[in-house]
Image (cartoon, rainbow, N blue to C red; front, top):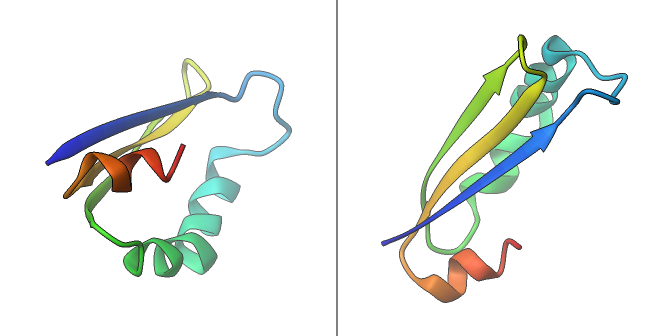
Length: 68
């Protein structure tokens, strides 16, 4: 298994955390369900620090690198 951590700084973004969560539910989750080798994706958010991100767990290194 290979892990990939992706973080975004939303300090300058006009998007709210509520809008981002709605986007996940409405459009993003279904897309990732079909991603080759993806075993788990955990979303991370901190409204206080304006950070948003995800921890991915893939079967192989090549599958993890394909996301970058």
